[in-house]
Image: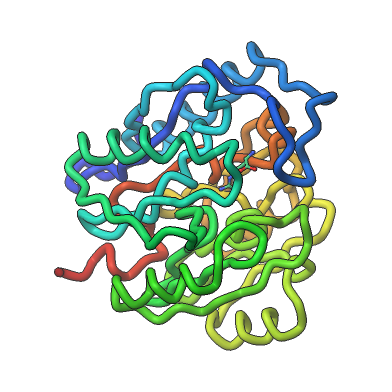
Length: 284
Ligand code: ARG
């Protein structure tokens, strides 16, 4: 049974089945080819995540998996979606650059107008660019370039708040920050420097702090579907805080994806705008 209101269209989420998923290279601090993912378990965990999201009222659309592209499962990195526009990622690491062609093709098939950033500007989509209300919070340095974020903000005509990521374990912004609603977000303070923390506290009125142990369990890598928030297991304090704030948290095991430096949010891309993004409700 779905929990969505039957009068409103279901939130649409892009996912890609993990048929060809594995740890085939090392491009972040979590990945070691000596610590392989169990593919059968990954398939089961991915299926459970999909079930939870559907239970929360989402409609899941599937991108076909491609052999040789093990990280295609992390659809958050395909693009940044804005109404019917998709700003395609330009991956920093050559190991993931082969995904761009497939992402472009799939997004075009879904009716999006796909745009690219200039050559040489690295940008990793909704992994590093997160709307909180009208503001685009953007992580840079590890994967995306600050200049790419300014270019995205200019094109979409939204204010960009650049946040430097300095800890290699929190290399994408969505590993340490998750907008919940306009003016409200979850974050792990330790992933930012003093300046970044101050800026965040200034821009986002209500911040729910995650401790280091739960941040390591990817507590901040949450999928928000209305009042539902879905994370990996191992985040009980965050779940308590979410309940107190009026949300309904759900947990689902994602150990095999953590081995690649990813979790719930990384495995999804909202195609219709997240609840935290005001542009969802604005006309263009
Ligand atoms: N192995 C992938 C990489 O390093 C994980 C991507 C996780 N995605 C995310 N949005 N945080 O690129």
